[in-house]
Length: 245
Ligand code: NDP
Image (cartoon, rainbow, N blue to C red):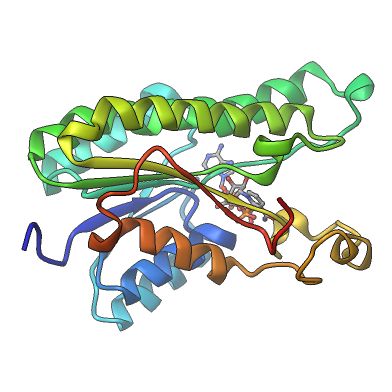
């Protein structure tokens, strides 16, 4: 066996939505977790309690993914104390949707800073320590269908999510011979707070499977990419979208 469970995986934005589902699923599949969220709260403590009830270990760390120096300091302190992670799931993200002519500079900046700079800020302090483990590793970044096709009212978000695909593919090449895989998962319409305001009946008509997806369905794909069975899959984008593209 190359490695034995429990390995530890960091999930960003683990307090709700897809990140919470990913953390919960990874625990069920035998991993220990580092649960990241922006700030302390009952939500992340409930996720932690659920994971511990599965018999797995979980600890919580906090930072705003856009605050580069804080991210670096928190991650370095955590891996100095506990050792570096087997896996990292870059999940934290935001939207600020508006037709391009009305898109404010701050809306462009905040979406790029959170989704794309967040990828750099979280992974940069971790990649060299992951290499130095000299063991297989896993990085999964949440992109989006918008990053593959572009989406009306999401010029900023589509740019950030396409950027994550390019960055992941390049990092995958850099890390391939180290046995660290890097892949993207690109969800379609998933029911979370992020998509709460969308007209559900209209959206369903656009989806060949005629339904929105669940956070758990995205989590299952992420967990597969973290498994030993996925050790030869790298530099890929896996769409989870009910057949939309
Ligand atoms: P939610 O809005 O439900 O959750 C977003 C998560 O990201 C929250 O945990 C939030 O923390 C965290 N987050 C946002 N900004 C920051 C920040 N600056 N610093 C730290 N944490 C932050 O989104 P989803 O669960 O729906 O989405 C998860 C990922 O999947 C995102 O990357 C999203 O773009 C992607 N995705 C989602 C789709 C969908 O249909 N839902 C479709 C395609 C992709 P807090 O609670 O503090 O706000």
